[in-house]
Amino acid sequence: TEIALFMKLPELADYLWLLPLGILLSGTNKTFSYWAIRKKSFKVVASTRIKQSIATGFIQVLAYKLQGLGLLLGQACSHAVGMFQLGKTFFSARGL
Image (cartoon, rainbow, N blue to C red):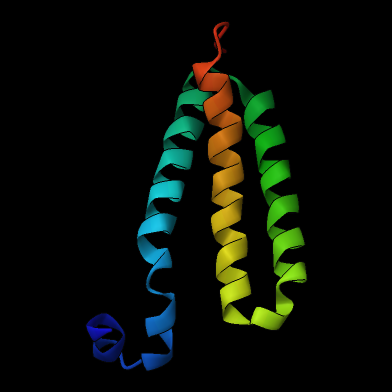
C-alpha cells in the first residue's frame, strides 16, 4: 500500500498483487518470444500473438463489470497464453 500512497493513487492498492504475477508472465513470454524469433519461427510467433489478442479481448469484455481489474486480468491472461503457447513449443521434443 505504500507504493500506491507514494504514487498518490490509493485505489491501486487492491491491485498490487497482480504486479509480480504480471512481471513473471510478461518476462517469461518475452523470453520465449525472443527465442522463437531467433530460431526464425515467425509462424509460431504470429499465431501466438493472434491467440493473445483474442484472449485479451475476450477476458476484458467478459470482465467489464470489474472495471480496471478486468483490464489487468485480461492483460495478465494474454501474457499467460503467450507463455504457454511458446513454452509448449520450446519444451517439445522436436523443438522449432
